[in-house]
Length: 204
Length: 202
Image (tube, rainbow over all chains, first blue to last red):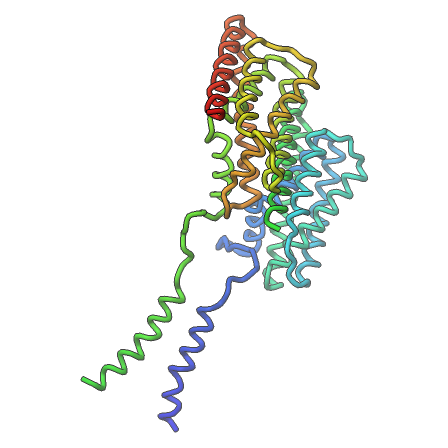
């Protein structure tokens, strides 16, 4: 009996070893910074241009419109992002649609380039939609709920800081050329969106 | 001696399996990765002299024309160029791309050389028309396996930097000698365009 157990052990070990080595990459997209989940979430946002650029565009747009718009975006966007993320944590995985990503670039970049006179209500709606959509996508890919909630907080904190800095920077701009430089940045974002749209059609 | 051989075999098999399962991703030709995507996109507009000449000429002409053309033209060009790039990516054919690119350098260079001052709409339409050819060429020449987002951003930022270079050079327009220098630069751009047109025809 003892001999039989000993002879099966290498086989079991081999099977377990093979299964472990065949593990496919996790779909969760949080990279470890080594400083804990809060910083993982923060760095995830800063290293993800598909999240960062639309937020930057919205912050610049609200900054161009004025301080009250900036304040509205500053609080609406992170709160919506957090809500979207919390819903996403309990959802099954969702794949970001390339057309929607390109659409955000086009819409926000275009509004910024045109220096569109968007209303405060429209700014709020844009911030809420952007936050809920991206937050939801972030939440679905974060993995274990305990660490993911903390990572989400780090991510939302990064959104808050970016909107605060970018909107405040633009609000205080007075020189005509400086405000035009902000609009040029918007045209670049919109142009990137157009190319992404073409890419999305090509790879379909 | 015979009894030691099966033992060696049993030990060697897991080792071999381990080595095979630990195989890393091959770094074959189309390099992947986000930084690569950005750099490839950034390099693309500055890798061809015909593109560079036309894009710098847009900045030079904008600087000559002054406000608001100084910012309308460099905003119009990347937007319409991206539209052309989108058409190229979607596989929509556009005839005479090489001729269009060469002609853009000739006409924009000539506009700088003769300091042509058309209405803003006409200038923007001319720049936008030629931007479609440049964008289409970039879109169809896109290498596979790149990050779409970062490639696009690198591509647009490089184009914007070339316009900014043209505007920067164009600031000499405030001095009399600078105006002459800009005209000479426009002539050089037009000559470069003529060379590329000749190459496209031959």
